Length: 89
Picture 1: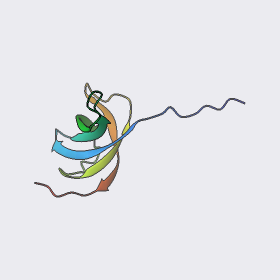
Picture 2 (picture 1 turned 60 degrees about the horizontal axis):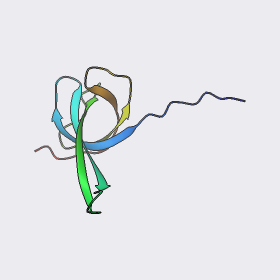
Picture 3 (picture 1 turned 30 degrees about the vertical axis):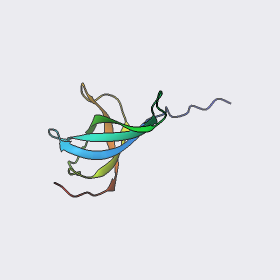
């Protein structure tokens, strides 16, 4: 009995750092990895462009985004939910 399962979609969580155009926000995602030589935990950062259909998030919010089919050249994530509302600087 083979059941068709949903494809695995990545979920990223990060802080909104910029409103980049209409229906788009830039999200900074931080991850902690162990340095291969020094065995110390270091932070690695990457920015993703996330599709925000309703223009509902502001700079400083912490959000979760889910992977989707590519919307544009750099945009392949859609807003999933807002974890916490931040303070706009």
